[in-house]
Amino acid sequence: MSFFNTKTSVIAKSTIKIKGRSIKKVELSKFHAKWYSANIMRLVVLGKESLDELEIWVTNLFTSVRNINVTIPKYRSVLFDSEQLQKYYHIVPIKDLKSVSLIFQMPSVDSYWETKPISLLGHLIGHESEGSILSYLKKRGFATSLSAGLHDHSNSFSIFGISVELTDEGMKNINEVIEIIFNYIEIMKNATENDWRRIYEEEKAIAESKWRFLSKSDVSDYTSTLASQMQIYPAKQTISAAKLYIKFDYQIIKNLLNYLTVGNLRINVISRDFANETDTPLQKQEEVT
Image 1 (cartoon, rainbow, N blue to C red):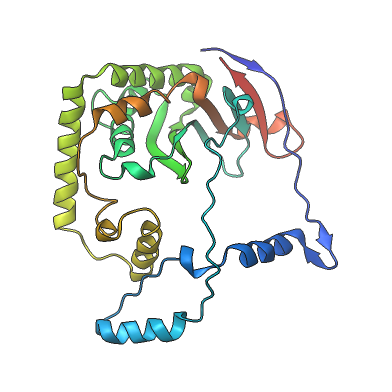
Image 2: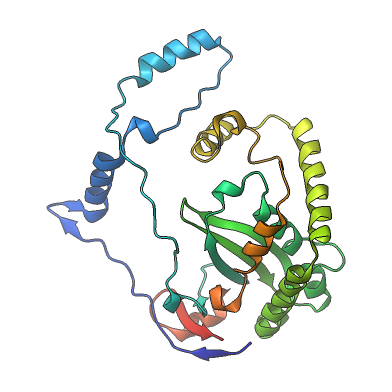
């Protein structure tokens, strides 16, 4: 894997005023007028009162919320265009951090809630036991921690990320760190269906055990999370869909693994060592091959 420079700087942002109002407020008002509609909202109410009493409260408080029957937009199927891929970015942090993040785009995974392929990929790549990526990087003195999983998603695309906290030695050998990660991904791609089924069954059993002994969470966090999940999952599975594994699908796993390639990659490298590279915050971009 090699890297070569094509430098670009980010220009500092400024706020433009329109008759005393910032563009941000104008756009927010437009967004509210266009999209604030009851038909695309979800509501969760939690309380010790009876269901009948809670229903009365909800009816009294929320019946007046307007419904203009908007349709949820379908976003573009990819977040990054081809010219934005196969590049890495030098980012200067405020704190003294050293890390690298590998960012891959793929189709929306919202419909895969029964099989949870992203959870399986994140589990293997982010594992810390003997034989894992992090275990090997620590032995080489390159890294202190590693995480992997879904960074962002919409109804059209998803972003899978692998983030590594680097040591000074890891920063000096960042190309080797990236190659180690891709070598591990290649092992995952060569795993058999039985290998993946075994991992799936292990994760399913762990998830079911956690579900049985699930502890109470903060009320505010629980209700807001549940309302968000109602936008994605079927009504009857809203509470459990994000936590339980329902069925195994090897083909979906294989398909998503095919998106973990250099050709579908952006790399963010964060370090204060880059502070002298540009006068303007906060990043420089380079191409990856």
